[in-house]
Length: 183
Image 1 (tube, one colour):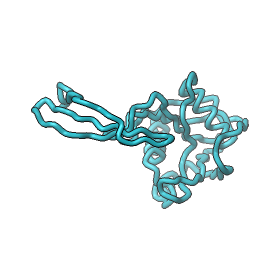
Image 2: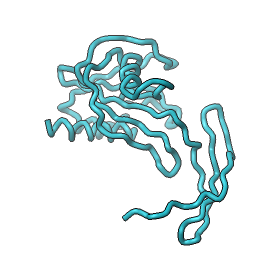
Image 3: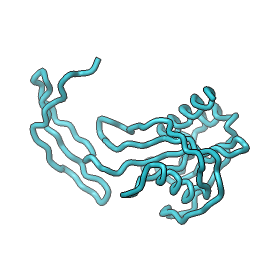
Image 4: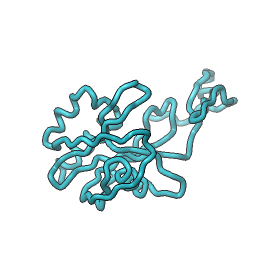
């Protein structure tokens, strides 16, 4: 099913750069001799985490946060980058404390995902966060985040909610539902 030989990179160059991103153009030669130009975000060593926090009462804790890409407020799960020298679990707990005011004594890895492998190499670890305890850390968000409680028993309705549209949050919720149904 998989190709045995990756394409040869004939050349690469940075074709655009911003404060946050570098775009790289790759000249590739495939094993059948075909040549193509691909563009991608330059690989980064910084990966990210997303957590599905579940309270002892069976509520999901979501955040409503402004998203510049869609120019609207989106409903999703707490997430953020892993800082240098920090483990994914440490980052998950830090982000939970910054964004929803809770830490977790029980983080369970659901899956490592990539957003768009044709363009990005960054990975995101998806966790279920349970056994929550109150603890607030100051975050880097420009405005306070609205924390929304949503009954886990109504997860199907959340999947259909107009403001719950981020693919990573949807994947995390579906993996959480799958995992909890096996327990």
